[in-house]
Amino acid sequence: MASSIQTSITDTTTKNPTKRRKLITVGHRHLEQPLIPGLPNDIAHLCLSLVHPSTLYSVCHSWRRLIYSPSFPPFFSLYAVLSSTNTNHNLPDNNSIQFFNFDPISSRWDSLPPPPPDPPLHLILRHPSFISRDLPIQSISASDRLILLAATSPGFSPALSSPLVFNPLSGSWAFGPPLATPRRWCAAGSAHGTVYVASGIGSQYNTDVAKSLEKWDLQNKKAMISNIHNRKTTWKWVKVKELKNGRFSRDAIDAVGWRGKLCMVNMKGDAAKEGVVYDTEKDTWEDMPQGMVAGWRGPVAAMDEEVMYVVDEAKGVLRKYDPERDCWEHIMESERLIGAQQIAAGGGRVCVICGDSTELVVLDVVALPVRLWMVETPPGFEAFRIHILPRISRPVN
Image 1 (cartoon, rainbow, N blue to C red):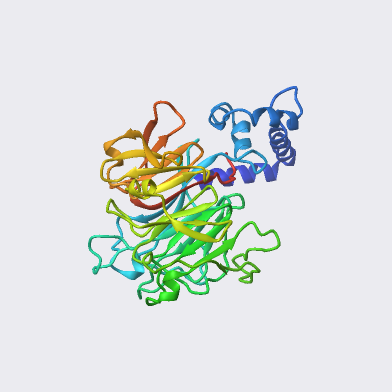
Image 2 (image 1 turned 90 degrees about the horizontal axis):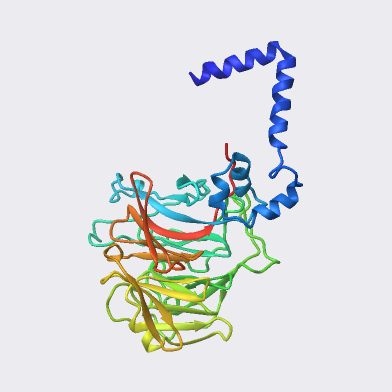
């Protein structure tokens, strides 16, 4: 039916040039319609940028197109690393992942462009030898980019020799600088636009790697990230102050950037932990404050690197860290938060992957009381990692 309609339009406009010119003229008039009648578009743009995008989205198509244009201030949306629930994850060839973006304004999931095929991304998420747990995928957000840093290959070696970087503003993937020692089961995070990778193991355990800390400065204006076709890059990883021991290579850890520091513990879960803090300006390590490590009872994330939140995965409690009193303040409790696996914070929201990875919990921590709602993953997919980043520019019909 669609084909026949298209043919009819083509034939009619070919036989009648005047009608064809009329259609084009109408199209141009449509594109040139003012955003606000009576105002120049640049002034209208400034006025509309002060209105919440959800309001603009529901008014008219021209305003809807505006909020997704590169010139309009981008709103935050949710990015997720997903895998099919219908896949046999015990087979290496079936352990592919996909990247999706959830637009909170249109309430729509869209798949991101696939990562570059060369080199191919081969990783495993589950294996018969690890019945009770998933093999980790380690991704972070830094400088408004999604960065895939570490995973496990079918041969139980590091799956990534260089980070994979997605830029929402350009809608494209690129390669980061190659790691001196590709690794997995590491601590990964960012602070002030710099990516950090600590500890972990390579193809086999090595003490030097397990104690190492390396950084990649994304704010270096003289550096240029490589694109898919050009693997050359002037960016590089720099070794900084190493850890005192290699006890942080036993699990895949989120290193949380907070007020110029990098905070991390040596294992996940509700058990007692060892915690350390890296001062990014002084290049020094120190023990984590007792109250901070004692309350680190589940996944942790920082809002704008200023306020840290934790979800107690055993009790389903959301807490906020108070540095003055060195304690975690109770914010709210919900059964839906029990079994929390990972959280992301940004734009006044805390998003949580819980026990059922096909549903995500979203918490508006600015509202009083805190508002909670659920977002379902795309049908047939489960979430492994989530991040909050600026929306993607896209055309709207």
